[in-house]
Length: 249
Image 1 (cartoon, rainbow, N blue to C red):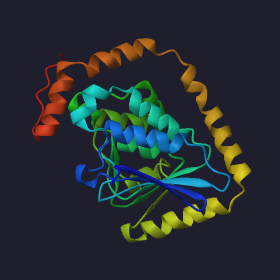
Image 2: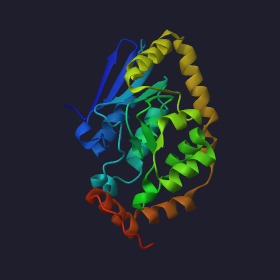
Image 3: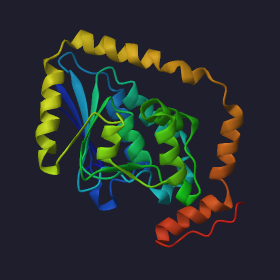
Image 4: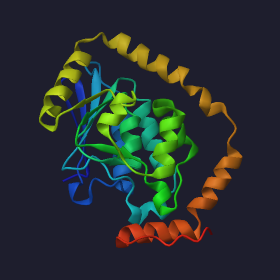
């Protein structure tokens, strides 16, 4: 069974993260499959796409066993494909969306979450940092205050809180998640396809201004952090389920 499944049902492209035994942690194969699923242009009958996940966890982020090998580029390419898909993309989040899983949800156009879900970026707790591309998305959708709280503290925030802050579109009781997701997709499918495509293109262009900001110096600092002894210690500690011993080097 594939770790990422994609099928088209009527007007909806359905993408499923299918690695529940690993909390849907994203390995290199999954990143490639997700990127391919959203790089394939929509057919004439398609109106929307939806991302879901098998099991109780939406996505625990990048697989730490491969994290040092992958670097930032593969996840950035995948998220760019999701974000720039020509039609609205809905994330249906039943459980925790952490680090790369948080970014995957927030790169979708609409997030519908269960009250049981939590969203967060635990990178500071394991000695890592987001790339320019990932931090930019947090600022776009969450604003500077919430972004600082998410990044600096590293603790996940409840879906209800993110809904109150306007970061996600809808939060419902766990038992109502299926109904809410189906309702949102039905409403998207009923709308005019040319309007949906034009609106998506409009919003992407209006938010593109941050791409032009020079950030090569910041990229160098971020790379140094990712290659630090603290980063190696943090990832090892997380895998070994112990507290990290950071030394600032």
